[in-house]
Length: 370
Image 1 (tube, helix red, strand yellow):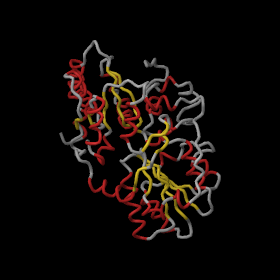
Image 2: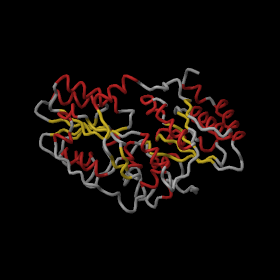
Image 3: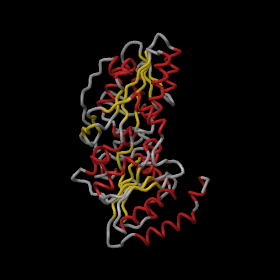
Image 4: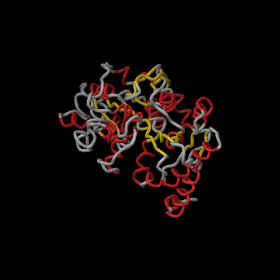
């Protein structure tokens, strides 16, 4: 198949749904985590949950980079934004994410220079056209967006653009999955692997999940047929007692990953000893920082960063929802105090957040099983 429409063909989708129903053991309850927030939104946008047997439960995972970022890191970035002659730049999905003292947009309303960009190269161009200012790019994302940050930093070094820096919040997906697997309150049978991240990392990094934990992993695309086919592949493995990594998204994801992108990341970044994740706590070697060779463009070196740890509002249950322990409607604030117009947690703000998906596509009063 070559075209998007083919992956949304009703007849093909119905055929795969029937095959899923035939393959699923009616005496078994399946708990499958879709790691990527993009999968969560696709599942509810296309009504795929309604095509699955009742004993096949999908659990959303930590694959939303905005959602997993703790409030303290947002506060740190906004502290830099308030320094004299600083221009704060970030992707659009960061603009309404709250720290303890407001969001980037609220800071902009108070007169600080806050700008939305579509890529880190946009931020570098702003630095080139504003030589009297310091432009800081608030970098965020999994391995999906890290290569663009790395290439921009290589470009900044080539230009000797010393009025540009990166506040690095790039995180890596594998340590987070391992932390979930080791969590005593999480029971999972398999994973729908992240499609976007895997275009960079490839499939090999997930082999430990099958080898060490006995859980199948299927890397999936984002169209309805992609996701349903991935679930069918998972059920086939479970039915035969197998656990391995399979690549459903072969048209996009190479098994070995994007080697030029990985080389650029290896040149620019190194692993942090540990990093805090919202809902998951501190996870060792789970995030990237700039290497010493790029210290001149590292905002954490160039500026004094408070580094204060901040907990989420007590009433919000972002951590439990992020880990898949609770479904969004089970949070006391969901759809009431916390909604897209007045989000309290990042899971409602982000375009990939689980709460935003439930609010938009699932009726808020629908009973939810745990």
